[in-house]
Each structure stands twice: as C-alpha cells, then as structure tokens.
Image (cartoon, rainbow, N blue to C red; front, top):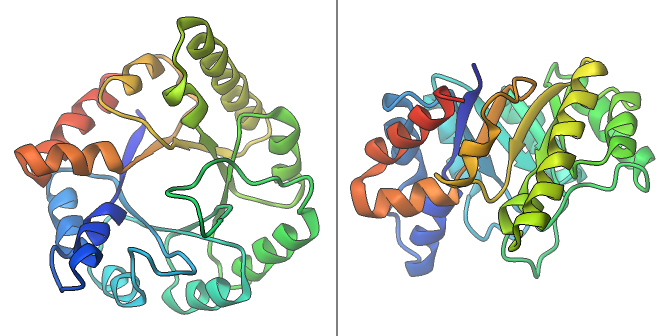
Length: 239
C-alpha cells in the first residue's frame, strides 16, 4: 500500500503573506500526522518565500513519522540538511521566478554536481531522492549516481487538458515507475496531484508514496486540516 506524505509549504505561504507568525506549518504538520499522514514534506527554498529555517528545525524536533526536506543541490542547503538530518532529502530544480517547481531535475546535464550532492548527503547517512520527469534516461542516470529513490514529476499529467494528452502523460508515469523499480530505486510521485487525479493511480503498485500539498491545504481551508488529510489518505489507501 502506498503512503501519503503531506507538504505543508502553503501553510507557510499564508503566514508569510502577512509577515506574521501564523498559521504555523509546524502545527499543520502535527494535525496531518494525527490524521494519519505517513510523512511531512517541506521545501526550503533559497529565497525563503514560504518555509523558513526555523520551521525546518522545529519540524525535525516534532515530526514523529518522517520528515522529507525538498531542496536545491547547493552548498548552503546541503549544510542545513547535514545539520537537521531529515529522514529523506529530495533534490529538486529551483528557479527564483517560478511559482512552484515547474519540472524535474536534468540529471544527465548536471551529473557531476548531483553526484557530489548525493555523496555529501550519504556521508551523513541521509537517503536521497531525485525529483525527475518520467524519462527512462533520467531514471537510469539517477541510479548511476547512487540515488536511493526518485520522485516522479506528475505535473504534466495533472495539467494536461485533453484526454489524449492525459493518457500519454500517464503512460509515461507508468513506464517510469516500472523502470525505476527494475533498477531497485524507491519510487515516489508528486506535483499537482489532487483528489480527482490521484484515482487513476489505482493498481500502479510500484509507487511507494505520494507527495501532495496544495490540494490538501486548499481543502483544509474549507474542512480543516485533519479532515482534508483523511480524505486524501482514504483515496491513496484505495489505490
């Protein structure tokens, strides 16, 4: 059965919009865990647009399930990860002008830098996942640089408009998940998934965990954090 890791970045987005100290992503993480979440995800961006250093350190002290730190493969972020020691680091591409992460890492073009980052994190016994597009060549390269797992970027599927586009994008996800499993890589999936799009993953047993944030936080604004997480968790458990 696949797990559910809840991303609480957008609780921090709401807090930072007013420059005050609430709502607190740490409190949101506690509620997500009480609702049954298998992990908590935060992305500490270089520009600190939502999650702050304080959040990451407090989450390390309070998260009881699993803390997943998304970050760019920079010296600053690697230093923070070594200090915090999250249960998993997911290396992601990062552009300051983007609203959210727009695509997967190009592992092939940045092999040396990513291999160095993976090795540096492994020195401190921190497992590493690479956020990549559903491309078999990228997946093969991820295995070659000793990543522990990948997270398949599901945004193209979620954002596709026509049925044909959705079918093609989902077929690529299936192929990617099976390829990664063949290479003994762990397989997570995330980006843009919502209460409707998650249903199509039924039967794709190669995926170990789904990372979902925005849709859960959006529903939480209407029904509360625990209920929103429970609603998504029920769908994931039915896959």
